[in-house]
Image 1 (cartoon, rainbow, N blue to C red):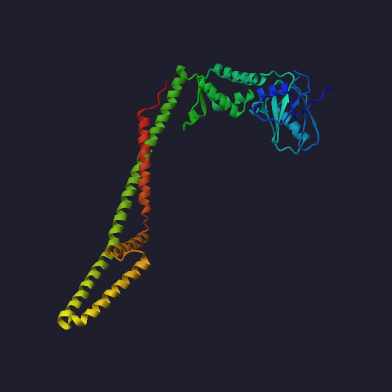
Image 2: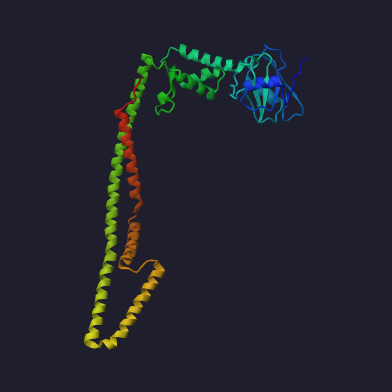
Length: 370
């Protein structure tokens, strides 16, 4: 009976083969002890929950990767993650049969440990040939499909049958598009285009279907433009109402400080008129002079206190603005009006106008089908 060899540091010749196959960092490698070409796996694996090496045998050539994973997990229940990938790190579908797996180098990932599994019957270019063969199979299936289009779900099912899961299938789809064999509108908002693959995109039948789909796209663009225009009308009407309320509120807020200004001017005029009467008609200037000094000093002290409290100069403009802003805030709260609404509406209108302009350009210059 042959025993598998666990090597923490593979010989130079084996390391050169692994380097050609793998772009992953492998911590160790094991060899399949089963006879080449039988489609069986006889492995001695260092399982994290069991000391030493543990034998894992799968003798059914018709078994799949899923059965191999189940067998390893049954051997060590402490394993949290078991994956099977190609030597270059591509995750293998769990439906891939062991008869195919035993003809190539592959990697077992046990938790975070990568173990390179080598097969005696594997060729140095086995994995590239295996992947190329699977891609060629998918390519041939698509080329032989007589339909003008294929649902995206059907394409994924074909790739899964060939052993490729969705990430690899998407990579192959990009390659098929590069070769002009198919067309797929992955980012289209139209579900009909997004969930279908156009086969033979240059054939008259496919072009006709594509044009029909694009026509529906343009119809959606047209409806979108009309909806945005209707929204623009609503926003413009709402903005005019908000601006009218804002202007009326500002006018109403000016009434109180204006009235206070005229009352103050009238009071000051009356006060100085009284001083003039006392100086020239009642008393002399010699009597009134010290009184006017005290009046002036009182004004200076009042201005100083005003600046200390408000941090502003006691000018007529500053005093008026303070009264105005206070009255304006009270009226806005009373009328439940937020002046920031005008700025928000103006921003929304600008965005909608840009959207309408873009949609109009798309509508006037539809994408050409070549």
